[in-house]
Length: 101
Image (cartoon, rainbow, N blue to C red):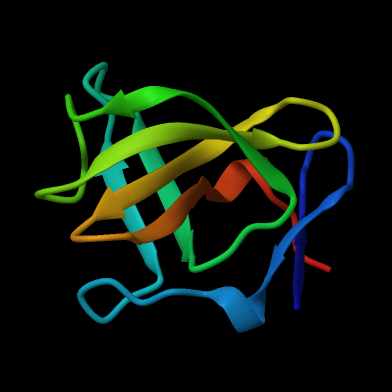
């Protein structure tokens, strides 16, 4: 299955790249504002580019930092790239920012 950007249709990642964290590749968390956000985890997301520096505030995954992950084609914010350990990372992409094909 392919996961394109909901805003422009550009391919972001695929089911082959889904990543399990604590036994699941889909998680839901509350933003500091209280908004519920559902994310899918991917090892790779070649349709994303990263913006901003590493942030450690309000991380949903203990011991990680993150950067913003945006659509390479249209610039829509799709989620985050999380970093943990030495040279290890994964993408947490907002479920509603992606479609399935």
